[in-house]
Image: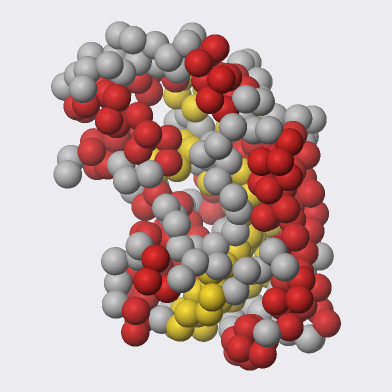
Length: 310
């Protein structure tokens, strides 16, 4: 397929882009970064590239962008300011929201205005849609939460649903993505390797996770499998408690996991964003079971080992 990729130059894109090329797709990648700053580890002549800031409405009138939109059969939209990289003050919350809502809104408006109807649109969301809970279990039929991230995900999905009528829309509510070179695991590895690791907070909060390879596999499958439509929780079958995640990581690295990270420190670092980590949520997918997606890494220890063996 001829694919347009938005926001696919970061942690997930580093594996997704080579995988899509290997499957024979033709790619046009759009990013506000310079092409030489992309860390995709593939030759630059293997894909088209446009440097455009898609959060600005006027940039959607770019002639090259419109030509590639008209030519594409599928769109993958993973645009969004990282959630846990900076402290959540009001300015950062605004950036987190604007980077997702505006870009997706302008995408759908441009498609309709130009009468462009891609076969499939894959749009990211997050399991933050459900809010946090130490006790409840959530699936695709569960209600939206009522905190900042839940409201953000709801708005994001509502905007995505304004897609052209005949385009198939797949929304993935993505859990904590695991791989050694980034995300939550990437931040925890250096601490564990020097023997100072431990659970975050009291360790009793749930972690709903997915290995990056399985997330990329889900996206690839959803592009071509028309059974994928609507919302799916992109999470592995077995969520775990934070204390069990810490133990598994310690075992895989042959290091102790005795020094918990106090919640007060996390609140200083992340502000309101610490709530997401300290309370967590137990999320499963009832729809992926029905679709019989075969996870490469269904169990945590295998996923951690695969991520840390190098």
